[in-house]
Image (cartoon, rainbow, N blue to C red; front, side, top):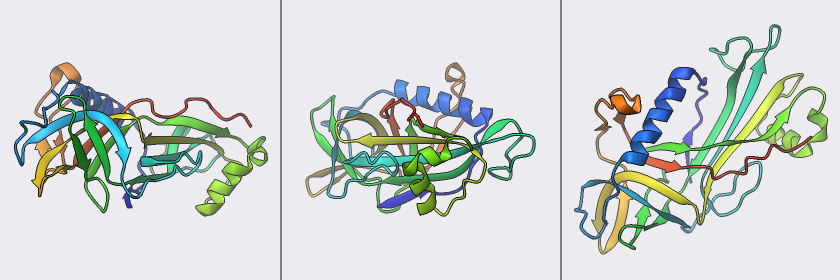
Length: 233
């Protein structure tokens, strides 16, 4: 298993619009046919996920047989409340904690019907664009009514105090449809999609609101995989 992101990062509008531009870029990038794709070719493949030998489980909702999971804890900062990170402004939500994990999985390509091994575990460079959904909202009045949330923050040595918090979770599980952009690698009749050896430049995409961007890793895109219902407490 590979933890692919642990660094605290504030969420801002520039990141939001950059993400929107990148997801448009991924959705409009043409799908390749793996039957004729050459070894070392940079391709996009869209298909259905099948787990490998070591599936994941999402940390809060305990969703089984996942190949990618993310959990993001946000805090709302009022006038007198604490900042979630060094760049957290008052009267906004700030990112306090983030966990992302990924493992290798198989993708069944819609174009060719072939199955390829996607190498995103074991420290592989990964750029995930996976939608997350709010799973629980917590404030000082209701925090004791969710033992699952209290367990979750205790396991991570996080304090709750009198904070207003929101937990978002995202995941890709077996059976979901995903798109991956990476490099074809054929090794002893095993077809793989691996991270590119060097960054790929998107060029300027004015129609997609995307400035030239360097993609240093395998791109993984999945939409609306999580249950969008907020857990009532």
